[in-house]
Amino acid sequence: MRKLLLLSLAFASGGCLFFSHDTVGHWEGTCQIDSLGVAYDFEMDFDIDSDEKKEIEGVAWFDVTGGYAEPQEFDLMGTRKGKDVAFSIDVDQDLVPVTFSVEAVIKGDTMDGDCVLGASGIGVRGELELDRI
Image 1: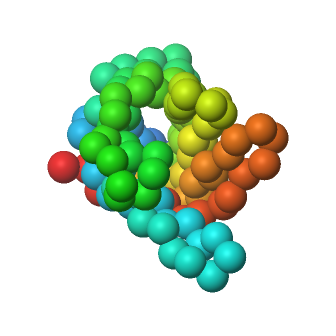
Image 2: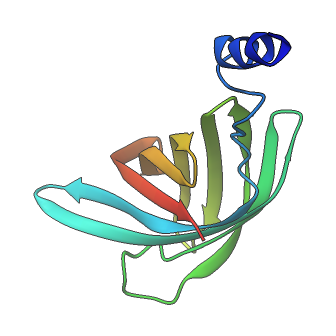
């Protein structure tokens, strides 16, 4: 009876006693952006080192040119509320500062959601798919 009560409590609370939405680890995948009918696949690599008190921090590697240059390393900072994750990366380019932002949902070892690549207040939205490696 005690086990049944604990199990019922765990599922009633969203399963948080058994399932974690922790983001720490190495993530790989793509942000696919369609701009004026042309699809750009931005290959992404993230190492999230810290996921404490709803704040996440780590390092990101990606190529802001969509495959025309070697990936660069950037700081990653954001928030996590349960399974919802949001973070941004400020990319200092020579001419225009670029921001890459993510709003995603963690489902086990996958992170799916929206990605936005923006500059000068204008952003292009795409689809993000990441897997924890």
